Length: 251
Ligand code: CAA
Picture (cartoon, rainbow, N blue to C red):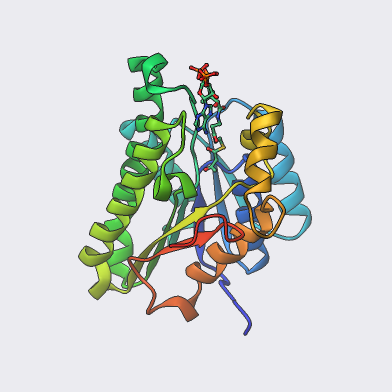
């Protein structure tokens, strides 16, 4: 099966994170024009992404905005669409952690994670869903987490937001199914990335030992699933949650 997304425009949030970068690379490789969105914390990484993708012949534009701010998202997306054309594919990857047991979790820790990981998905998707529906084709892929499916000690905020992501997916999938737009969730397990490397080593090793495949996932494992869901071939797949977790949580 060959996946071609030639001339489609894909918008990826969190594009300079480990998963986001690989999603850009896979979708760019399938022929997409890329709107690579980042929050401005690591401009050097974002510029490197642009250089890499351009060297492979891909059209790419950077959009810098905070996904938790609706007006910023709206303006940036309009700017991106004026450069590369209307958005056909959205991959909502942007996310943060503020891990602490609930007894130590401050309102700021709670709100930051909900605002970026959950409200961010509303903000970005809301800005493009009508355009996709009116053109009769679209793909929304929301990155959730194994910890939205099973909960995780120290992640009341993150687990709540990520569980909410799939609720959003299931609702919106029903709203746009007749319009040729699919909406799906991908729930990665523990992927080799800075987010996982920030977990204390002893805990990280315990986690790895609990993964039946015996290794952390790679960004490629997630990007391959996202690329399939963005494809023409996945037109009858909607409202679903795809675990990419090495068997870590089977349910
Ligand atoms: N289950 C049960 N008990 C646990 C536990 C667990 N998983 N982890 C810690 N504890 C216990 C400790 O043994 C300790 O017990 P005692 O008090 O009896 O000694 C107690 O909880 C520690 O409590 P503290 O209040 O001292 O906790 P802390 O302030 O040290 O914070 C933590 C702990 C920061 C949450 C730490 O456990 C941690 O980082 N855990 C990992 C969380 C995690 O998996 N995050 C995922 C990040 S990656 C990601 O999110 C991407 C993705 O989508 C997968």
